Image (cartoon, rainbow, N blue to C red; front, side, top):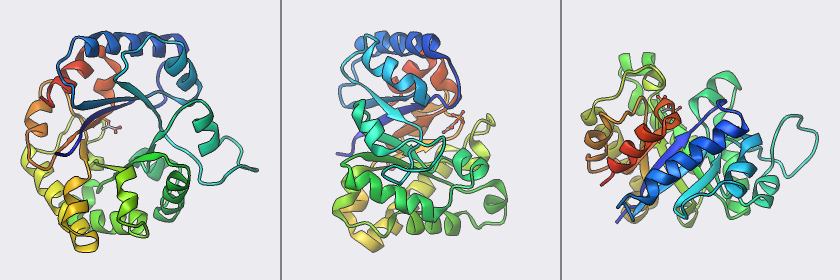
Length: 254
Ligand code: PEP
């Protein structure tokens, strides 16, 4: 059975106190939940990783992830963070390739392919994001775009490496827009993603990787989207900043 995952991407929001408060509120909801098989991940901004992870009373099921990481070991990369730095504070999971990184910080498939090698060399885990923009969907190019993002970012890896990957399909037109892919659109793309992976790595890898959906998931639509057979949970932006909403979304994996 594939692992269900709900991950909250807090983006560039909340100062240290507000991050700790939100983490604690989420934790209190999670403590009472009967979702023993769902992984719950929160991704605060860099400055808040340590205080949230080490100085906040959190339920043991809550994991803390980073929102990005540089591929180099160290060096003259002003403003960047390395794998070693994250590991030194106990962070092992990193969101990579978020559309905002691709769009505003020119993060390329090539850079992501290199970041993936750094993740693997350090025994870390990536939540690898990808998805088409609105023009691609409108022109019917969305499958092609998604396939090429997958191939360019991940297909240099071995079958065994896929144990360290969680995929997050996030159609860019649905991120932060309030417009969600329909459950059918999400299922269609997730099934396609498994077909592409299967052609390269075989059915076992394709069937075992968790594929999250991201794009305006809310308390009110989560359960329906997550009930699709190839959707294994969600990567959540806006709704992850409200503890009660995030908790309801986690409940949607039941
Ligand atoms: C995201 O940023 O990954 C995301 C899915 O955002 P939102 O839920 O706000 O659309």
